[in-house]
Length: 244
View 1 (cartoon, one colour):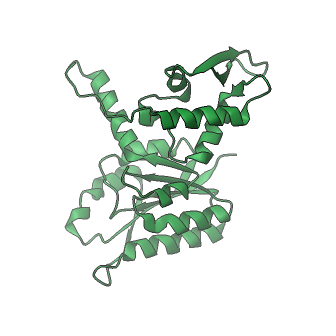
View 2 (cartoon, one colour):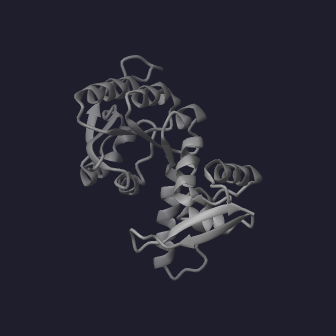
View 3 (tube, one colour):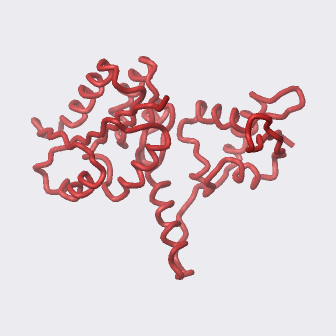
């Protein structure tokens, strides 16, 4: 059964440039049955959203700023999220913002057994990131677009997208996670490793380091062994890893 998602976007806090890629990313995790964006649409700086909303069937919610210095958009988005929660129409939420004001909302939705996916820029404060089941950086989606355009172009001088370095801290995280789920011989099913990494660190994503999947990322680190095993129930092989 497909997971139905409510996608709620903080229009004041998210750039409009990569919404198409963002919606394609969200579709990997479920069916976005509710798509709303919140902002004061009388403000000129939100005009650039108009065509994007039409192209992606996102419903704009008008929210006037009643008091200077107070974010009425956040309040409207939070109230709507709770109304949707109690309607029992969705199985999870995708909160699109780089604002830590949504930390308590994410926590409350998870307390109600909702899956919560966060999407925002790398400047997003840690409290909001760790309050989500999974957090995806918009910069990843931008980089994927750049890579795609570079592949199509013959311009070899095109600048490669920036990626994070695989630090000793990241390697220790992977190593410890493998140990946590390994059998007596030290082998761990890569799917279990990936799931636990996500629980430990919601913003962990191999794409942050320039790899589309976890397998090539681990393979690039000379600290782990990788083994492919036949799967009796599928034509796809099972990938196992262990610490060297």
